[in-house]
Image (cartoon, rainbow, N blue to C red; front, side, top):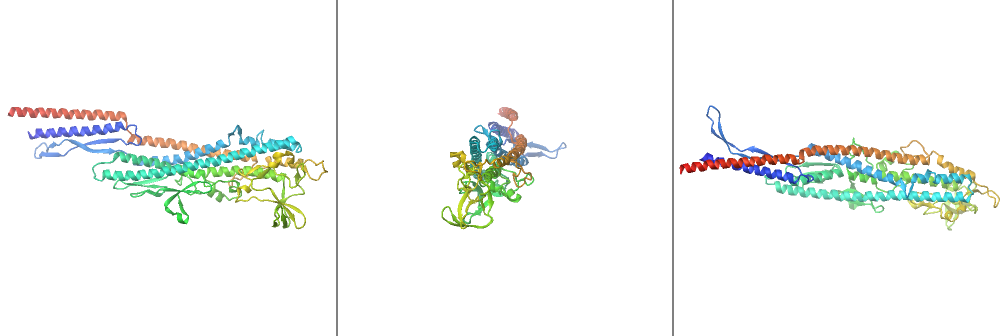
Length: 581
């Protein structure tokens, strides 16, 4: 009788175990499309056995106590998680950089129906205008054509340059949003750490859904940068972001934003490692850091955005005449800063070389002292640039100084000085590195307004002829035409091959396209590797509807078998009781 009642308890254990297994399987099926969900597997085990008679010749007699849940496995593959997160970070770096390059390439494509290359060297561009001008500089139609094409060249240059700066601000917004998202993920991980500790503190239950959510947050965090993590015995995961503690048992060390007052650019820095009151900022990234796969620092979307945007606006001064080391430390890693500086160098070269032929300069042999046009006493040392009065050409008005084609917004080309020796000097106003308004840059240059009013003021004549019979300056016009054939431009300090205006532009865009191809192919390869790794993870953690349905049939059958077993035992007990009655 006792054994019969014990058999009922064995049947009950089968019912309970099968029911729990069915619940787990149903939970898996309900979350088959839930992102980040890790399937749960039930392991059944025998309950303890009772030894009845160990002295028998056959062997010890045992009586089992039924079946139970040995464990519910929360299946993850730590190695695949680590590999996936590394590939996700690298893919984020290369795909974001390629997207930036691809966007930049559009600025040099069709702009209101005209590609920038066309306005520089095309059949209807500035080069053709000076070809015609060289045939007859005195022709008003040729003069007007030069002014018209020069105006188009400047307007297109400014459109490109402004577009590049606008996209820098677009990248800046993406950086700011990424920082916010990273900090939010950190706060999420910290809260999940607390919730997991509460659930698992009794040592009975495993907070599986909470762990899934935490792992998903770490997956997302890994897309933004280099992530390492370690789980403590109490279930808390400590996370490092870019090799700095980000989440621990008690804190989230958020990334703060340093905002540049001039550009509005956001620079991420670690607030807990900085002393902002003294102006000391521990930046998350180093703009001059050498990036390579070997150094394992080509990881993260945030780094890619930060490096691509750069930390300032650039112009020709940032690439002209600097050393390779300075170039690598400042512009080398930044797509936007590099292309802005290279493009502006091209515009600066065209503008200044054309101007220097229309209004040529020489160095003064002696010091110049006198009164300037504003009545101020001035003194200039020997070697100061002044107008070459003897060899310069003039416009139809024969006035000195001659009109330059391109003017700066902040100053005129010359300051007129009446020297103490009675001579008139036209002192060239040098470009000021600290003030873009005093530089011949894409942003700060325009067509001379006086020439827009009257094209006849364009220097086209020699000044040593008879009144009304000024000789035409063919030599000067031909020299301007030949500027497009001069090979004296270098793309960067690393460039060793001089090139013409057209070759410079082709080299600049070709290198940009080549860099884009490299980043695109790398991103495509990493995307495939990332997907392959994730597929491997899904084989471990993913839910298969077919497999779960098979398990459901198996556990349902086990439940039914336990039920029938209990019915049989119940009938046996009832028969015994009736016979004893």
